[in-house]
Image (cartoon, rainbow, N blue to C red; front, side, top):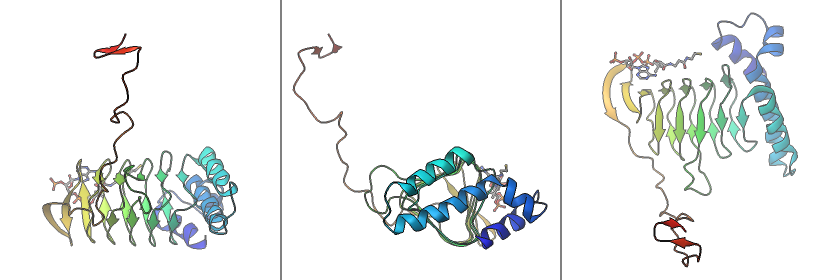
Length: 207
Ligand SMILES: CC(C)(COP(=O)(O)OP(=O)(O)OC[C@H]1O[C@@H](n2cnc3c(N)ncnc32)[C@H](O)[C@@H]1OP(=O)(O)O)[C@@H](O)C(=O)NCCC(=O)NCCS
C-alpha cells in the first residue's frame, strides 16, 4: 500500500502531498480495498470479498475483481469505468487511466483475462481482451483495442485493431503476434442450438 501511495506521487503531477493523496485520490481507495478483498478471497472467505469490491466500485467507479493479482506501485488515474477481471495479473509499477478494460473474451475458462508485466502503461479507454500478455515497459495508447494478441515488451501499441507503432524506441508499423493461448473450440451459442419449432413461431418469426 505504501508503494501504491508513492506511485501517485510519481505519476500524478496534480498530487500535492500525502494527506491530500490519501483523502482525495479515489482510485487509490479502490486499490486499498482491493488489497484487503484479495487477501480475504485467498483465505476462501465467501461473499465478503465481492461485497468489498462492489462497495469500492460504488465509491470510486473502479471495478476490480477480488481474484485479480496486482503487484506493488499500482497507479490508476481518474479511474471511473476501469474494469479488471478475476484472473488478471498485473506486475509492478503499472499505470492505468480511466475506462480501461482488462477483460475476457467469454470463450476461455480458467485464465481468461490479461497479464500485464512490469511497468505497463494503458491510456484511457484501452481495451485488452483475452488471456494475452502485455510485455514489460509496453504502452497501449488511449482508445486502443487488443483482442487475443500478445504485446511484446518495450512496444507502443495504438489503434483498433492495435498495431505496434514503436518498438525499443524506434518507430515501426507491425502487426501484433497472436496470443499464445488459443481460443477454445467454439461453443455453440444458445441461439444456435436447434430447438423444435415452437407452435407459436413460423419460418419468418413469431406468428
Ligand atoms: C500511446 C502514447 C502512450 C504515446 O506513446 P509513444 O511511444 O510516446 O508514441 P508516440 O507519441 O511517439 O506516437 C507514435 C504514433 O502513434 C500515434 N498515436 C499515439 N497515441 C495514439 C492513440 N492513442 N491512438 C492512435 N494513434 C496514436 C502518434 O500520433 C504517432 O503517429 P505517427 O508516427 O504517425 O506520428 C500516448 O499517445 C497515449 O495514448 N497516452 C494515453 C494518455 C491518456 O490516456 N491520457 C488520459 C489523461 S486524462
